[in-house]
Length: 286
Image (cartoon, rainbow, N blue to C red; front, side, top):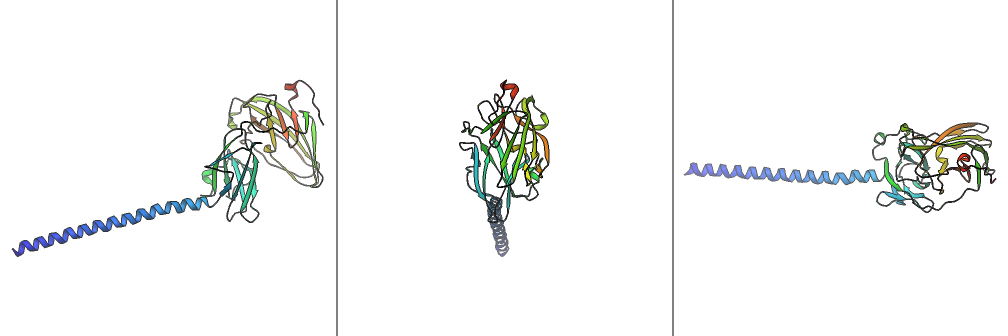
C-alpha cells in the first residue's frame, strides 16, 4: 500500500512539475511575443520621425495644385537639409533653416510619379543613379505625386523661335543670363533613359552667364509644353547640374517624353521658344 502511495505521489509531483514548466514556458513565450510586437511600432516610429509631413500629403499621396505644383511642409528633426529624388536622381533640395522645418513648393511632373525625400547626407543635389536601398535606414520616405489633369496655364511673357537668344536680368541679384534653345526635335526614344513611350523631345540648350555672380542651371529649370500648354514629363534619368561662373557658358541637352501632341515649346522662366519648323512661321514677341 505504501509503495502504491509513494508511486502515486511521485506521479503527481511529475505532473505538477510538467504543468508548471509548460505554464512558465507559455508565460515566457507570451512576454517575448509582447516585447517583439511592441518593438515593431518603436522601429516604425523611429523611421517616421526622420521626416514628418505636416501638410500637403495624405495617405502617402500629394496632388498637383491648380498650376500643377505640389506644396509640402514638414519637419526633419536633427537635419539641416531635405533632398528630393525622382527616378534615382537628386533633382532639388530644401534647407531646414536650423529649425528642422521645410517648405517645398515644386512644379510637379506631368505624369503620376514616385517622389522620395531624404535626409541622407551622402546624397548631393545633381547625383544620379541613386539606389534607395543604399541610403541610411529610415532616412527617406517615398510618396506618390498625382498631377492636375487640367492645370491653369500661364503663358510666357516672351516667345521666340528656336535658335534665338533671350536675356534674363535681375539687377538686384547680379544675374544676367543669355539663354538660347538652339534646337527642338522629335527623336526615337532612347532606351537607356527609360522612356515612357516610343518618342522623345530632344532640346539643345546654350547658356551664357553675363552677370556678376555664379548661377546654377539644371534641365528641370526648363519646361517642355505640348500644343495645349501642358507640361511634358522631363526625363530625369538624363540630368546635369552646371555651376556657371561669370563670363562662362555651357551647351547641353535635355530630354522630355512625348505624351501628347504638339506644336511643342520650351520655357525658361517667363520666356519660351517655339519649334519654328513645326509652326512654319516666325514668332518674336520680344
